[in-house]
Image 1 (spheres, rainbow, N blue to C red):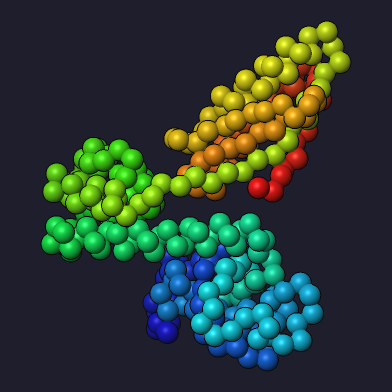
Image 2 (image 1 turned 60 degrees about the vertical axis):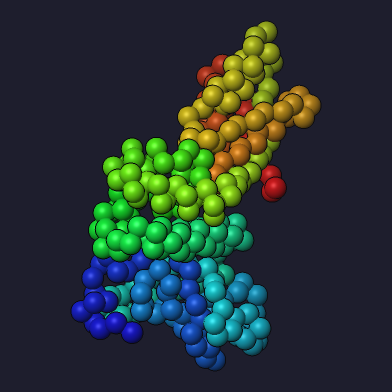
Length: 269
């Protein structure tokens, strides 16, 4: 456990509402203590009432020492060194997405270490390479995905030397398999006016062309009027969710402006 002075630094603490990945360190009759993997040395408490929505007769039926869990931060108190956590308030989708993000972060850190071994300049990796990659791509894993697709040029554009660009590109192409996530839902669009068909076509076109992250794709398919399936493919759930929201908002906006009716229902994939 870190000292009180270290724990009191705001940047070392999660914010209320954050999702975190942790490792269960101790299980007691009143709850479970969890080490927050993304905040070195910080430990929080998940009270028994926050473990599951159902009655918890035996905590060990739900969690055990060494288990990786995704939790929501309910309350923090840096002065006292307390973090209150909840598992029951995390949805299955949130748990899946957060765990995927965490695994990718760990994977990217390992790949950067491999590239560092190739170049042999550890200090540069920490002080120059990682900051530039994060500034250009947002996340290290995204940087390696870009390199796997486009090669050395993406790293040179980020301001890295030819030596680092070559090493990162080689590691990315050898170790990264670019995957896509898929989410979808159903739009219901209707208009009883004489220009209803044209209005719906316009709404669907605007949905398909709505702003989206690089390499995200929006597909639309008629299920049978007035139902239209909208499906988004992207590199990660964050980009997919943004693209889906933008597309749905565009379609609904066009329909409402033309005195039509529109609604959206999410589907599980």
